[in-house]
Length: 269
Image (tube, rainbow, N blue to C red):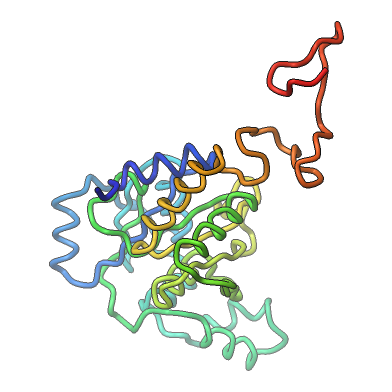
């Protein structure tokens, strides 16, 4: 029996100890899809234009589902990624700080993934557990260990190895989501520059993107691994103590009580 979106989120949050809701990113290509979404989902809209990352902040940290359009999107990087803006001289100049000259900047910009112009009507982002339509991409804000396990479970579930994620000059969240959907593959990249002061991340998180159509297989693989090893962590089954696998499960980080008796859990005096 297929798992619900709420069940998928609960398993991922509990077993990988995620800090944030996994974000369901849903492209809405027609007026009919937008209206269907509005009928089925409690949603909010930005009062003022915000960046795509700020839409996602409401989803991952506040549990809100945001319906965004070109009119409520302030970031020109995202506008280009979603096919809501052409690459013009102003956009080239805004990205020149990352490149050696304008020619390289424009070449880099045109090589980034993007939607066909004006193909999207709106974009919905919200907690995976609240999704009412099948999301196109699941975007995780996570740490490097969580990203590793998501990657390994994805490779096992889809029989894919090695993974070849894409890093671009800026457009990490928006372009990273577009790349994941267009290529139908796992993606992993760092956030854009200014991630702290622009409200993108709080702990130096990294980005993982999984196609919505592959998510259930990844979670099924995670559950299979837990059943086999006893834990979502393959380093030391059943032990959540960080650093416990310093050298191939060598029991180095262990303690004893002040009276010399064994500590609960480690079984060693």
